[in-house]
Image 1 (cartoon, rainbow, N blue to C red):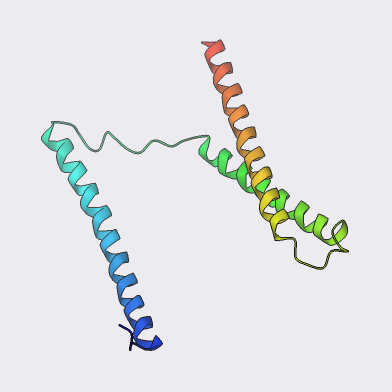
Image 2: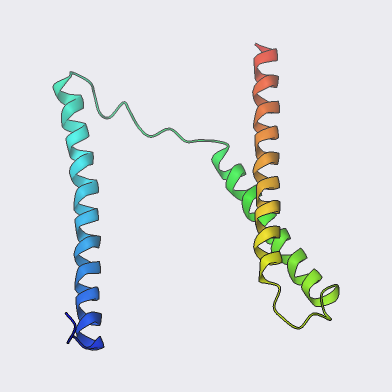
Amino acid sequence: MENMDTGNLGIMAGIIISLGFFAMIFGVFYLYKRERMAMIERGMDPRRYKPQSAPYQTLKWGLLMIGAGLGLFLAYTLDRTVFKSMEDDNVAIYFALIAIFGGLGLFASYRMEKKETSNNIGQE
């Protein structure tokens, strides 16, 4: 292994990555078929159990992306205006503001879901 050159390592990495990818695809299909066969053995109809959509999932992702975008924009603006006099790059502010605004987006999603579910419970 010590005498291997970089070209051989690149070829081996390509082979291993390809094999891993195909093994993952095979495993997903194998488990899917196995689950369906187990449902049939128990007398269940696999066609009745379709994946249910999560209505708030897109809201959650949308607010997360909006928050991350706002955090990135604010970090860029602060880096170019307020921290302009500093010599080094301010990488930490980018990660911090993306995390803060992304978290605020997720929190806003939680509040909206909670409000909607409490309204639905009150109407019933």
